[in-house]
Image (cartoon, rainbow, N blue to C red; front, top):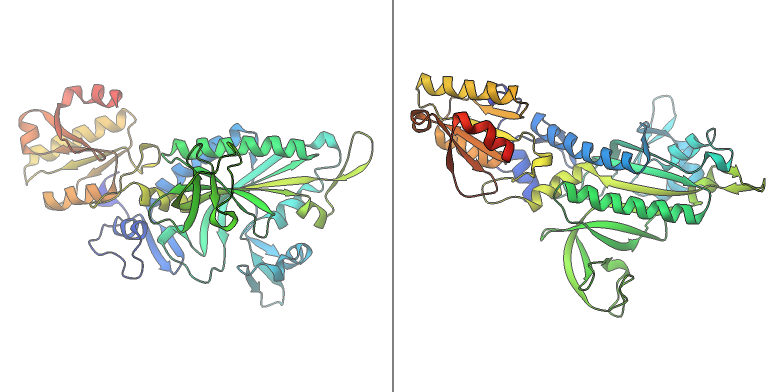
Length: 413
């Protein structure tokens, strides 16, 4: 991709209404554009990051047997009345059409997925299964803040599992937990499984928290085994559910995922039943598993940045290589850079090529702001030596590599 043709520009001006790191760097870098409080457009760079996060999540959900579906955002009022959440959920967006019909914009999809399963489940032989989607959600939050960390419209992965008994639910619940930890680890985050209350969903839940100084949650972490407790269920006399010890450290965390045992909560509302092996009618029990996709993007920026800009982990970076041409008006430099760009593309590398006619200082500052893992610089000095200057965004040193050896260097990386 030529940067001169990229839809989106960098800016030296940070948003005045949101001091959070992720809002400041993502808007300045041209990853996102704020539409209104809690609502963002994703420009090409930002969408590439979002899609890469989604791909990792999708791979791990498929690996534990999840089947991907896609459900509507617009829900009939009647389904929400059936579960009691039409009047019981304060963040629910409600819409009345000009024809007098009322709808909800989905903050989650229990009210759609549960009746969806009714014509599919009749016998114990139809169980268990899990379905998931990656979709836009809506919540009428009273106060939105911290960029992508809390919004009124956001991207989420939600999965729902259906089981014949508690033992089967528990087994899948633990597999989902392990898949969550693996998902976050793959994108560079060490998540802490944190015991919490379940809100409107269940009595208890498990959150997956990332320790960051700017986190909005207070969590207590076992010093012995790293199990966490949310402050809402914590007491000084609490013991760790794993090691049974009472030794905690307080920290700040940002929640990126949560899982709930819904049990028969929503199945009962919609009369979702099956016939067991003895021929008796039983209520299906369910689990729910969410990951905040856009929120993860914000947390990654909060976690991986310096005073110059973002430092993307390679697996979610919009491009792997940022090729920067500092031609100084010399045609031979631009020609050399073009040759390298075409060669890198031919080798299958994802490359953002800065071919803009701007000063070297501006180009290098923009490269740091965008946070692409590897920067390759072509300049009059490097051309003289038939070399390319390379620097890892997360490192400090710059080195020269012979152009003819570049492919070997990249393969080592």
